[in-house]
Amino acid sequence: MDYGKYKYQERRKLKEAQQKQTTIKVKELRMRPRIEEHDYEVKLDKARKFLEVGTDRTKSNSPLQNKRNKVKFLVRLVGREIAHADLGIKVLNRFIEDLSDIGEVEQPPIVQGNTISMVIAPKKTEVRHAKN
Image: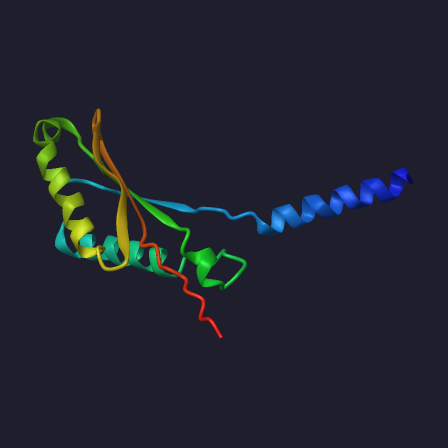
């Protein structure tokens, strides 16, 4: 067998594998537990757009590629706020309720030291093929 032909075929296989590979993008939104209403709405809009569409950097406009985005919410507790972690959890639960139409909780709110984190992923949609 020709070694050059073998190397060429290996490069083609590698290129095809990379094309079929999917990447998951995670956007991180940071906030404080005493977030104002307008700031909350801005963060909500950013999260909604990212879950629905993705970012401008996506190479493909394929709906399947854009549905692989996730949003990680971080609530940072500083000073005396650490004693009131329930306020941060209330903010995250509000995000869960407001994004329930397009997203589902992948990782529930977890308190880790002075931060509370949570991950929301897009809802899984069934792809049904019609039989002819």
